[in-house]
Amino acid sequence: MFNLAEREHRRSEVDGPWVLLTPSYKTGNDANDTIPEAVRRFLRSERNRRQLVGIMGSGNRNFGRYYQKAAREIAERSGRPILFEFELAGTPWDVEECRRLLDELDEGLARRAG
Image 1 (cartoon, rainbow, N blue to C red):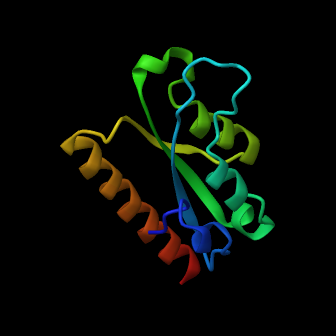
Image 2: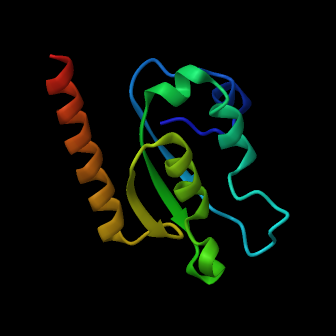
Image 3: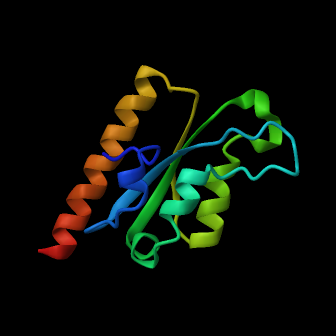
């Protein structure tokens, strides 16, 4: 797991398939971009974009129509699926479901590569 808030990770390139987990912070100001700048910078790399498998999003339902907006915009632009969405830090069920989905994805990618 890499934290794109850290400069060294933002400037790196992936070495295989990966899943993006991004927050959405936009609260209704149409002048503000909804995709966090760190994510935008990481996705400038063609290699990072090409290796992206899917997106998971975290958001706050209080943001109304902007709930999960970053994940949805990235999915639309990249043609990759949204794998999971959850509110704030998620519930214990959300955490388990994310783990299950990622394990399933890992297994599928391993079968495909093998």
